[in-house]
Image (cartoon, rainbow over all chains, first blue to last red):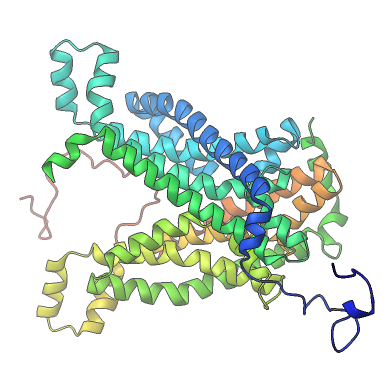
Length: 238
Length: 243
């Protein structure tokens, strides 16, 4: 065992090791191994926030899109409002929610759900409007109920657009979750800012950033696989 | 209520605007950083988008660029640039924001130039235009709406993201929000958020007006519905005679 503080510990050349001279690698495998549990904790929060936000967003976006399709007077305001909400910067969005829910993961969840809602409403509406009126007319003539019409006609035909929206919303939400660091619940974003505040510890910053990108790519690939699974008829023609 | 009243008080205090590192100073900083980033991105992205769009090659690369850029968190890029030898501060922020503004402009420019009708191009060549003239006088006017959409998306994104720079000591209006969190002052947090949102919305509005002004063809605001033609018989032709 080496002495922690002794004459031998002084590096050759003498004096104190300057902060700039200390090794500060861009990536350090031993950092990942040593902090595995911490990283997994942040990753878990990141995944929970993303999944929660996209689920809440979808649950609100679908009825809104259905309403907006039914009346043209509603479609305009819904789209205009979604443009405005999407223009709100993420920092401001979390700051607006903060006074109500405080420094909690709920603040981040509400902000993220609002953004994914906006993305999803547009894509859901595009998908629903893409269903030909003739097809719906024919289905109604064949005696489909309202629910049956949605479930058996609208949903399958609009599914590609729905899935495209879900993919975009999920990938954007993964990236946006990092801003939750503002209220202390940014998932992997905690590592990015944590490393910055820990005297620019690059290994931590890069691990957090890479984790976000990988998570987004994995989520995208998974959703693409789901899309293939649930739309088998798309492949037949190709 | 809940800090919104305090925000009004904060915004109503002239000293908060005019003091050093007050709202006006930070606003100037915010605009300078954003403006420089958008300009740098324009210089790089528009020629690349035009080159890719006119030749029509590398479509896959453009799609990949658009998708990957969505997956990279802005905060990560801001932080990574801040810990390079560039050092944290306005310069690192500007570079990171410029990098982020490139993909939307490239993608939209590509799509715009790609979408120009091949027949139109053919006709222009047949009329004796050089390649350069075709690009500048045929492709560009037709692609301009898409290009401007890209610029608007990029600019609004840059203005919004510049606020995040405050988390990594980068300056700009985000400072007010970050300081508010540091001082547990809800009013200041909301005031900062209101300022940032207002700036983003103004940028969007301004660029909608700019695209309306520069795009040739029938002038109409993007949000105003096209006027119905009066339903009195067919349109007269150039000779003034209905067909």
